Amino acid sequence: MKSLFKIFSVILSLYLINGCESVTPRKGANSAKEIKDFNRYSNTDSDNDYIPDNIEALIGTDMHNSDENHNNIPDGLESSGKFGDTYLSKEWYIYSTGQVMNQSNKPAIAGNDLDLMGVYHNYMGYNHGKPIGVQVVDYGVDTTHEDLKDNISLKDSYNGGSIGNPNPTNSYFSHGTKIAGIIAARAFNGKGVRGVAPFAKIAGSNWLINQDMGNLEKVWLGGNVVVSNNSWGTYFNTDTLYEKIMKKAQELRGGKGRAFVFAGGNDRSYGGDTNLQYIENNRFAITVGALAVDDTYAPYSTPGANLFISAYGGSISAYDGPTIATTTISGQARWTFSSDSAKNYTYAMSGTSAAAPMVSGAIALINEACPNLKMRDVKYLIATNAKIVDAQNSSWVTNSAGIEFSTDYGFGKIDTKAVIDACKSGYTLLGKELSVEASNNEQENIADSATISKNLAINGNINIEQVELTINIDSDDASEYRVYLISPSGTKIRMLRGKSYSGDSLFIPTKNWMNGGFRVTSPAFLDENSQGTWRVDIEDIRNNGNKGILKGLKLKIFGH
Image 1 (cartoon, rainbow, N blue to C red):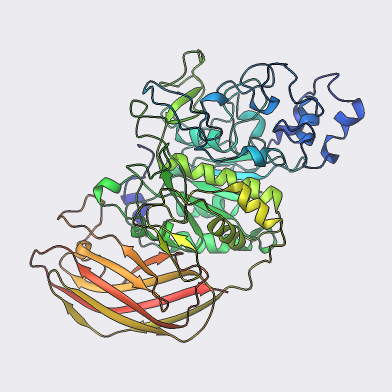
Image 2: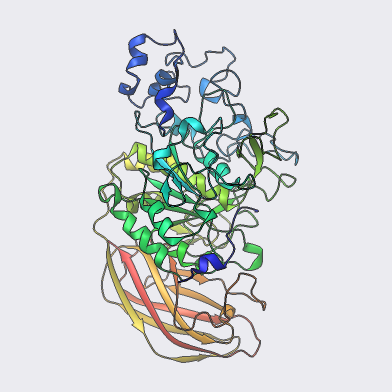
């Protein structure tokens, strides 16, 4: 079967050899015994310089001196010197002081960042010499890059469907190298940038160069990794093979599973909806939206009811505002800092492709702190500890369990520290996954500019994690329908955005695309009770004479 993924364009941004132990510690910083036994140190930060003691012992800095350069800058925030990160001061998404970082001359906003400094007192992905693995499925990763090579794991990487070097085959394929830098560019090496989890390991893949589903199964199920980053998707897709592989991956790691993080897409202005593709709206996917520097949604970030969480995508271009600094293929940078004569870095990354790896890096840190979590628990903790941003936005809905959700932001901005604090404070793992369902096969005509409503009765009572609604409409143009789902307790979520203008620019293959059933999903009803009467409202938002017949509905709810 020819996958729809091969037919439609890949959405990109606006668009280890585990090298940790190879570091030579600096002589004199700590005792010889401390250097030899650096893995025995707990995840504490004795001198409060944003570097855990075991990493200070590893790299040879003094765990009892927070300002070795005597310049009033904590060692973990240094941009200069042997142990600094040259462009850390430009990475506003990691630590924002209101800096200017590109030719837009528009400053970042102090405090609008991922709030990682509190996490860095304890966790950086190093995991006492067993670094947390993060997979980058893309056009490949430059494994020789000066700021990535110490964190690359070739034994967990894939060249096509085989274990091996995942280097890009073309110098234009820089996307995966940019993603890898956001996740795990090495810290404290006197070079470049810093990743969100700067001592995690990177398992690369160049699967996007040759999109064979058998190879994707090998990649997604292979490697010693906790999270798979996929900063790509399709504009429209109903292929369930992707989620079958993701489901199988939940058996990995002794049943704790693997997280699958996806970029939500950059098609807001074209009427895009993240719920239009099964790759990203199944319950195993974590779909990520993009924030601008002011903690509002980036103007390109695609909305949707299946959107799970948000992180920073930055401005659409370096001329508009702060963008994302990261690694790129060695020697190939076009948009880079004046001091980067080797052209190894870029300041111009943007899009949901940039936001997704921030979430992947965060999950690596969460796993280091709380290794017993299953991926359902990771998702639950991310959702229930997210930061609300843009609180006046009308899309925010508070469900009956008191949890806030937005089709623009998902549960909000990821808050890694809050998740770690929660999981280390007596958190109880979720129970076995359960499901309940109901159908309504009553047929009804849908007139122009009309709204019809149908009920579905759920008898089983579980705590909701995700809902799936399958809509079967025979229509001359299915894109003109806006769909809402209302829970028994009254929570109302827009499940499909609909398009108020004619024409599809999102590569939907047929106008009658709901005929036979199309599934939309949402985690917005998290922790509500499933039992009772659910209502579906279907609204025709375009008065154009098209005919439509609702042929049936099915609601399936997953929870515990």
